[in-house]
Structures are given as C-alpha cells and as structure tokens.
Length: 236
Ligand code: IPE
Ligand code: IPE
Ligand code: MG
Image (cartoon, rainbow, N blue to C red):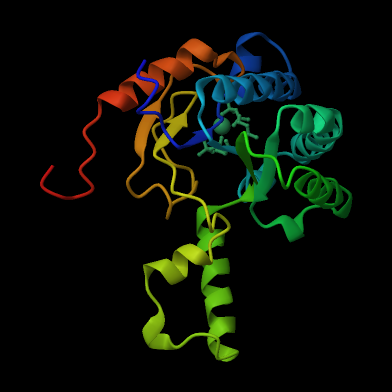
C-alpha cells in the first residue's frame, strides 16, 4: 500500500449487521453489538494508516421505519457506546462530530453528543463524523431552508447562490468531500448517503458483513483506490 496517496476522507456505509446475525441464528441486536466492535476497529485502523477524516453511516432517516424494538435498541446502544467511549476518544486525540437531523433525536442522546463534541473540540488526530438520523435528501432540504433564511435576512443575494453556497450549508461544511466510499454487505447502492458530497468519490463495495470488516479488508479497498485514475469529468 502506498502511504502517500491515502484517502483524506473515508466514508463508510456500515451495512450487514442483520445478515451477520441471521447467518449465525442470532438476534439482529447481537449483529449491531458486534458492529460496534467493528466501528472501534476501523477507527483505530484509520489512525494507524494516517487517514485524517472518517465518516460512518450509523442510522438513516429511513431507518425509523424498522420495527420499534430494533430502533429502540439501536438508540439505546448509541447512548451506551457514547458513554463508554468518552475516555478513549480523548485519549486517542479524536475529534468527534455528528451529522444528521440531530434535533429529532431524544434529548438525552443529543446531550451526550453535544458533550462529546465539546470535550473533543481541540483534538486533531482523526476527525470522526457519525451520521445519525442522516439522510442525503433531508440534508439538501435543510441546506435549501437555511439558504432561504439567509436570503430573507438579506445576508446573501439570489445572484450569489452557487455550488459553494450549497456546500457551505450542508452538515459537512468545512470538510473536504469523501474521496473513498466503502459499502460493506454487498449491496451496490447509496441508500441516501452523502448524495451531494460523493459526486466524485471512488466507490468500493465489499461483500463482507460490517461486523467482520477488518484491517485487511480496509487495506484492500485503499489499494484499489490507489490504482484508480480520477478524472473528474476532464480529459484524464
Ligand atoms: C446496518 O446493518 C446497520 C444499520 C442500518 C443501523 P443492517 O441492520 O442494515 O443489516 P442488514 O442489511 O439487515 O444485514
Ligand atoms: C444504510 O443501510 C444505512 C446505514 C448503514 C445506517 P440500510 O440497510 O438502511 O440500507 P438499505 O435499506 O439496504 O438500502
Ligand atoms: Mg442493511
């Protein structure tokens, strides 16, 4: 693996927890619990490999449609993991951030999230973005609404609206777009993830279910990424 040509922003659609569990005759909740272990693993692998920004898709705006007990179980699990990992985030110099419709989440959870954002604000080894209650379409709607508010408040003029205006109103403002997008679990779809930001990301689909995704699988994706010729619509 080339240690120079690394992705600067890796985004991952962590899929396959349910199928991982089903294959073993275990409840889906066990799959999600194992998925948390894989989250810890990928964070430490990104630090080892010097990848500076990692965005993980944890819960989508559409995932509320799942059975009530699975949704409740996931929300409870997030809270538990945030409590448990506080010290590790600080120790490992990780700056955590969350993207999504955070105001629709239970107050107890957003309180924990805000506390972690504050506590890790000055850390600089890894920027860890967790997408929770996140939807790409919702993000664009929210960006449109905040641009309209700026228009009403006369902070901007209609003729000034361009791609940068949109970019600066997304949840990811200030961050470069992902250059590598990995989806585990084999499905070849985007499922409403970062639809603006991945316009020119390189895509890697791994058949491995998320709880099994390990360092070798990650390196395999990065190696393939390093072979790609990125053309951005130009002559190449
Ligand atoms: C991804 O695994 C985790 C979340 C969406 C929260 P899934 O729960 O979607 O697992 P599969 O796709 O059913 O295997
Ligand atoms: C995408 O996985 C969302 C997350 C990984 C959080 P889903 O399992 O929700 O996607 P679909 O339903 O297969 O498109
Ligand atoms: Mg899934």
